[in-house]
Image (cartoon, rainbow, N blue to C red; front, top):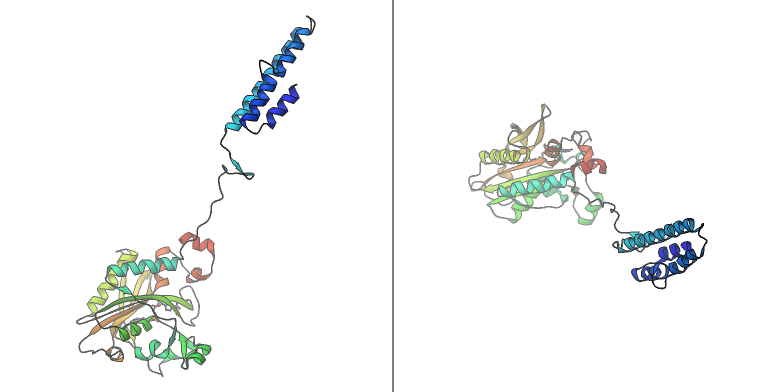
Length: 325
Ligand code: FA5
C-alpha cells in the first residue's frame, strides 16, 4: 500500500490526477486505507499497538506526500520545454559607442550651441581640395608623396591624382565653393598621414575643422569661439594658449596648445583665412573675412578620459573600450 500510494502521488502531474490518487489511497468511504485499517482490526491484542502505530505512520506519510505534491503543483509553472524560466537569465552585453564617436557627438553638440552646423566631405580627395585651393603650391613640402597616402588605383579611375585627405581643411573649400557667406560650420572626420606612430601620433586620426566667414569676422571671434569650446568640453579650468605659427591657408596663423600632464600639448592650428583662399572660391576678400581652425580630436579625448597612449583607441581591445563606453 505505502509504495503504491507514494508512487501514484508522485506520478500525478496535475490537480485532477492528484485528487484521484488521494481518493484511491486516503478516501474515507472506499479508499484503500479503509482496507488496511480493517486488517489492523484483525490482528491479536498483543500485536495491535505495534501494528496500529505503523498504520498511523503510514497514513501520516501518505497524507504529507499528498499535501507536498499539491503544493508543488500549485507553484507557477516554471518549466517551459524543460527550461526553468524562473532562473535568472544570462545578462546580454550591449555594445557601446567608441570613445572617439562619443567625443565627435559631444563636439557637434557644443558647436551647435555656438551656432555652427555640420558639413561633410569625402575622405578620398583630389589635390585641388587638399592643397591647391588651400594655397599650398605644387612645390610645397606638404605635398611630398612620402608625406601623403596617394591612391594609385583611384587615380586610374578618376584621371587625376587622388589621396586620402591629410586634413579636414578640404571641407572648408567644399563648403565655400557651394555656399555664400555668412557661413558657420564644423566638419568632423578622419584624416590620414604616414606619420611615425607614437603615444600622441597615429597614421589615421580625427580632426574637427571650424569655419566662419562673414563681414567683419576677426581674430577676436576665433579666440572666443575656441576658448568657449575648450571650456565647454574640458571645463573652465582647462588652460589653452595661442602661439604664432604658419599655415599656407591662414594669415595670421596660430597654433593652439593645451596644458596636459604638466606640459603643453598641441591641439591644432587656426587663423584668419588667407585672401588667396577666399579668391580661390570666388569670394571678395575686401568684402568678407573669416577664420578657420583644425583640431586633433584624439588629443582632447585623451585628456578627457586620461588615456596616455593614442594607440589604445585603435587596438580594438574591448577591455579598454568597455571602460570608456
Ligand atoms: C592642420 O592639419 C591644419 N589643417 C589645421 C588648420 C586648420 C590650421 C584651419 C589653420 C586653419 P596640423 O598638421 O598641425 O594642422 O594638425 C592639426 C592637429 O591635428 C594637430 O595639432 C594635432 O592635434 C593633430 N594631429 C596631427 N597629426 C596627428 C597624428 N599623427 N596623430 C594624431 N593627431 C594628430
